[in-house]
Every structure is written in C-alpha cells, then in structure tokens.
Length: 510
Ligand code: CTP
Ligand code: MN
Ligand code: MN
Image 1 (cartoon, rainbow, N blue to C red):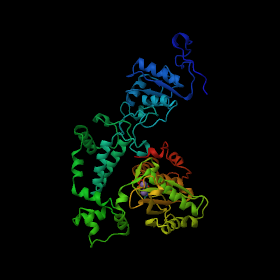
Image 2 (spheres, rainbow, N blue to C red; image 1 turned 30 degrees about the vertical axis):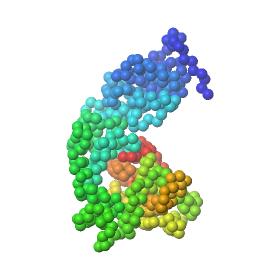
Image 3 (cartoon, rainbow, N blue to C red; image 1 turned 135 degrees about the vertical axis):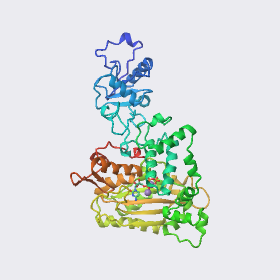
Image 4 (tube, helix red, strand yellow; image 1 turned 180 degrees about the vertical axis):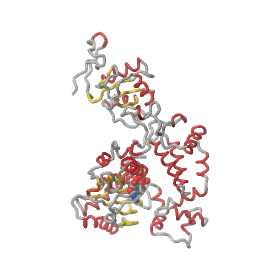
C-alpha cells in the first residue's frame, strides 16, 4: 500500500518553497521514477498546464516545472512533432538522446490507468521530414535522435490495426489489386506501399498539407488522395470497381487454387460467373480448384478468432500425440491480432527430435486427421532445405521448410463449446490451415517470416539488403560484409542484428 498522500488544500502557502525550480512538489510521492515529464505550455495554456501537472504529480508522476537535461519525455497538446521540435530548438537546450515527444493523450490515458501506459504510435508525435537528400530546417541532420521521422521501410514503422486512414488505404488496395490483375508490378507496388505507410500514421489525413514529408507517396498516389479529400471518393477507384475484368478476376481468384493465369483464361473464354464455370463440362480443374469449389461458401466466409483457436487445439492435440515436446505457434494474421483471417497458420518445431522424427511428423498428423475424417484437402510440400545454402535474394521467395496446405473439417461443437452450433444440417465448417515444420535452431527466422504481414516481410528484406548489406529470409540472416550467418534464438535478436527497434507482432500490420 502507498502511504496516504497529503494534498494541502492551499498548496502555495503550506508547501515549503522549492529548492530547485525543476523539482517536483515534495507533497507528492513519485511512483514512476524512470520517467521525467515536462508539459509544454505552448498551445495548451497556463491554466490547463498547471492543472495537468498537479494531477499528474498526484498520480505519482515526476513532472518538472522547467525543461532541463533530466527531462525524458515532453508532453504536448495540439502541437505536431515539428512544432515541438521547433520550440525545443529555440530553447537552446541540448536535447537528450532519451527525449521522446508525446501527445497529451498518453498522459491522460496513463493517469486514468494509474500508471504509465505503453507508448504506442498514436501517442508518439511525428516529425514530418522529407526523405530526400537536401537537409532543410527540421530535417534529419538537425533532429534530436529520439524524434521519429517516418521511414520508407515498414519494419521501421509501428503499424497496429488502428488504421485511421481507411478511406485512403481501402482505395489504394483496390487500385493495387487492379494493377496486380493487369500485371503492372510497378504501380501495384506503389499503391501497396502507399497503403502501408498511411496505415502507420497516428493521425487522419485531412488536407494535402498533412501528406508533406510522408515517404512512398508519388504523384499518382497524391492525385487519388486529393480527389478523396475533395470529393469523398476517387473516380479511378469507382471505375475499377465497375470494371468487368476487375470484377471477374476478383470473383475467380476468390476460389482456392485459382490464380491470375486461370482467371485470365476464364475471362478470355467469356466466363463471368462461378456457376457457369462450375457446371462447364469442358473445363479441367486441378485438385486444389475442385476443393476450392466444393468448400467455396465456407472458405470465403473467413475464419474467426474463436474458430482459429479451436483449430489450434486440434493441431496441438495431433502434433503432441506424436512429438510431446513440440511447440505449436499460431502465426500469420492471427498472431498480429487480427480478428478474421482467410486461413490459420501454424509453425511447429521440436527441440528434442531427430531429423527423421521431424520429417515424419506432418505426414503422421495428416494421416491421423484422414482416419478421423477431418481431412478435406491436403498438399504436402517436402522440405528443400538441404539444397540451398544462402538466404535468397528474392524478397518474395518461398521458403524451404516442409509444410502442408490443408482444408480441415472443424466441427461447430469444437468452437465455443457448441453454443452457436444449433443450426440445422451441416455441423462443421471447412477451414484453410497452413502448417510449417521447422528445425528448432531456425525457429526465430521461421516465426518472423510466417508472422507477416507480407508488406512487412518485403520491407524487412529490402531493409536488410539495402541498409545493412545482409540477406534475410525465413531460415537465416547472412552478413555479406562479415561473410557469416548470424544466429538468433528469438525475433528480438534478429531485429537487434539488423539494428532495428523491436516491433511486436501486432505492430507489424503494415
Ligand atoms: N508466408 C511465407 N511463405 C508462404 C506463404 C506465406 O513466408 N509460402 C508468410 C507471409 O509472409 C505471410 C504469412 O506467412 O505474411 C502468413 O501468410 P498468409 O496466411 O497468406 O497471410 P496472413 O497475413 O495470415 O493473412 P490472412 O489473415 O488473410 O491469412
Ligand atoms: Mn494467414
Ligand atoms: Mn497462410
């Protein structure tokens, strides 16, 4: 228990005169010693500042009256990062490398929680600087090191699922997809990168001025932003959504096993609906596509978290029946905190097993499910790990682990104990499941690679190559300068090897 706090009703008279101007009031106990706050008066006003300082101190925060070298965090209201920075520079104080600029929302949430809450992207004040070479006031060269500028690499941006620029990113994703369908890689990538960078912003773009200094926004992208700001929608997006080719490709690729090539063929043949394709006697389907059509409704309805957890139990039971010491980790979108997914991904690894036991595990698991009547589709891909020595240069390369792409029968009763399974007829749902088996010593690389997002992974590899002269893939990290493989037991160690601040899985939703 904390000792009762004495809060004098008339603090000015009773409180002893402070020795140093920057000392916190001795009337309050400091509970959180590692933080030294300074609240900026600019744009906040004296009254509100005094009120917040008093309140914060009562809650156990150390708040300085004046800016000094001991300050670790600056809290500001209605100021952008650049504005705080400008003010800081005018104070002629040597900015400490620990200095972090926070929005007042962090302080308010922290006081509400009775302790400092985690500082996430939405609390951090962003300094908008251009990534281009010429240094201008407030650009890279004059920034105190702790002030964040927006990186062109997703692995240097914290991207949670709180996207406050949906209106723009949804539009970009439609355009990127359309360019993908038309095999225009350059524009596809441009719109994917633009969507990714906007997802990381702690603020909503409301005017073109807000886009200044944000990387990855080319002219084409900016035109779309401008139109959406002005008209609430983009004419280009509208046209794409009404485009026959786009609509058909979107529909065809929604079938498991149907990619761009097949869609192209069906479109050229004049098909526009799935029912016509399904009932056509002349078309040949792959085993994958047959399964895709057979379980179409279930597979397009997406997997909920409750279903994913239930599949997790199923996988763990089967895996540990054969290798009791095996670890089963849910990866992919669900590990990043998503509430829905198109499949459920798992990484399996076992510290004590031999190569043979390792190789036999997935076939055994799949066999068990087959005997239990749970296996609706299975594509087992054997490991090709031996054959490759170096990590791949191709940032989108597939990995060499043994894996299987499955469709499993998940009985409703295994989800939330059958609460919602009272409907008639079918008592199960078909679920797409990916299982990956990796050698224990490579688990950190495999986990990082299979957690995604795809854009995050692409940028991580691009960053390793261009900024660190290293090659990263799902199995290894190779330092080209030192000519050695860098070992890692955890994702944190891989980030550290790359000189990156660690990002939690839920901050990788780039
Ligand atoms: N991945 C990979 N190699 C593959 C397939 C996937 O490395 N052959 C990685 C990708 O980096 C991806 C992650 O595994 O980020 C999960 O892939 P996927 O299930 O396709 O995407 P999710 O992010 O899980 O999205 P969803 O919720 O739609 O499943
Ligand atoms: Mn997934
Ligand atoms: Mn997957």
